Amino acid sequence: MSVESKQAVDLFGSAKLGNLTLQNRIVMAPMTRSRAINNIPNSTMADYYSQRGSAGLIVTEGTSPSANGLGYSRIPGIFSKEQTEGWKLITKAVHDKGAKIFVQLMHTGRVGTPVNLPEGAEVVGPSAIQLKGETWTDTKGQQPYALPREMNSNDIKRAIEEYVQSSKNAVEAGFDGVELHAANGYLLEQFLNANSNHRTDSYGGSNENRNRFVIEVARAVVDAIGKDKVGIRLSPYGVFNETGAFEGLEEQYEILSEELNSIGLVYVHIVNHSSMGAPDVPESVVQKIRKQFKNTLILSGGYDKSRAQTDLEDGKCELVAFGRPFIANPDFVFRLKEDKTFAEADQSTFYTPGVKGYSDYPSLN
Figure 1 (cartoon, one colour):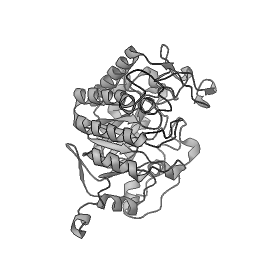
Figure 2 (tube, rainbow, N blue to C red):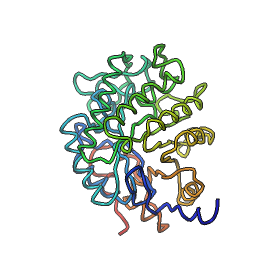
Figure 3 (tube, one colour):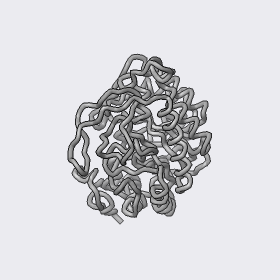
Figure 4 (cartoon, rainbow, N blue to C red):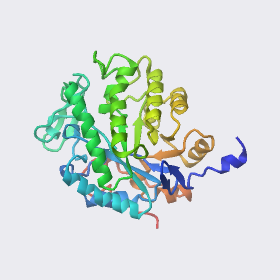
């Protein structure tokens, strides 16, 4: 690659994402922060996202498309009128700072307990396989994960409809698009992963069958709101929520990426949590996805400025996502560009309600 072409890609320069122009190539990665009281987005959240509006693209915290997907305390939804109205505060605040914003649609699936769900909702998944361990609830403290009810064909059809309606709600709320969360062991990845999907029908048992639900959701959402408004997050080799590797994984993701490319998704966002102690994501699977998927690729995972710039110049990706540094550094883009010191985040306030450790971190200016 020539020096000229290397200089043509700048981490801090503008970039195209479908029909959007981003003010830089820096993505604020989705991070659960648990500030949505009664699962409704609010003005405190608008402050938090607005403060970080110097990113090129912000992807919100995981936001449920269904009452069944509210497995954690205080995570937002986008399936009700009230939730959609709440998100309008946030999209306007972010757009006023120049950033674009996608909502991450995260159905928790088997990762949850009925204690956290609204009345009438239930914990469901591709198979009746219970997670080990416990999760926090505001009313009863730590509670064991529930045994999920295996989804039948009607449940699957209804879930696809929920993704579609929530995507329409997202457009109404002013979002530039949606990111389908098919990573980190939540519902979409529960179908993808052979360790959580033991089905013997057309949604399990082979690479193509395990991919089916994700592809059907992606196609239905694209049909509803347009391909330039739909991205997806994947975590091959991730271990979060008892997923993990399985035989034929790389071939399955290669097939999946080819399908997602034909549907025309605007981006694929690959999770790599090796900097936080998870197994490394082999370059081989990233290259397989890259080969099959022709639109924007977002890479994430322990990046610094130098590595981000190098990977952009080498054509490994078009955008780079940063997560935790954004928590304590609302002016992260400025600090990164000017080589300023980063503030350290208080981990004890990652998931607690209120402004402390959320929207009260100062900028340098």
